[in-house]
Image (cartoon, rainbow, N blue to C red; front, side, top):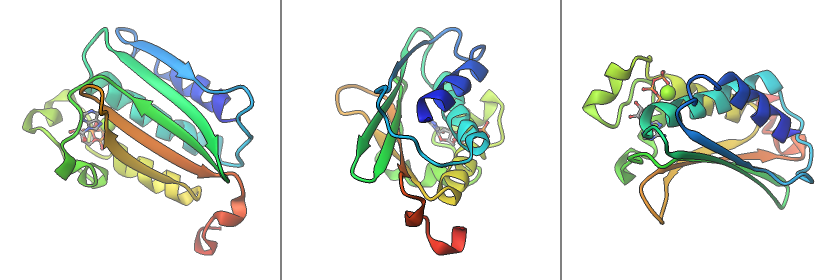
Length: 155
Ligand code: ATP
Ligand code: MG
């Protein structure tokens, strides 16, 4: 159950998110997804780590789940500076930083590259977007309910 993995990722991110507000909106009837919980928790942790690093203290980090068609969707939404349109795809490249100052906040610049590698290995997709209501980043993960949708080369 994806909600449980979100819970354990949040638990692991407890300290780094201590100065942020967090909210989980995941329906109790979200269908089960067959995936590797260790890899998936690492994906969520990397996204929460980014939200904690780039969004200001006191701001809200929202984790939203939904189910549409044969897919489970997860969104990690923050209230930080967001990511400019021209960087939305490039942030998944190793060592790509949006702002010149971002590398000083420790870290290797591999977090999102790892996220994409793991999500795609599990048959899903991940993309970065922007909020429309205010500044902030939105990371959307789509995981297939039916492992048959996993491309053969990854099985
Ligand atoms: P690491 O994750 O290895 O510790 P990192 O956070 O710099 O280092 P990534 O997680 O891959 O590396 O993120 C790449 C870049 O994308 C970041 O340096 C930052 O510029 C931008 N970025 C990532 N997440 C966010 C976010 N939630 N808000 C604003 N910018 C972000
Ligand atoms: Mg990171």
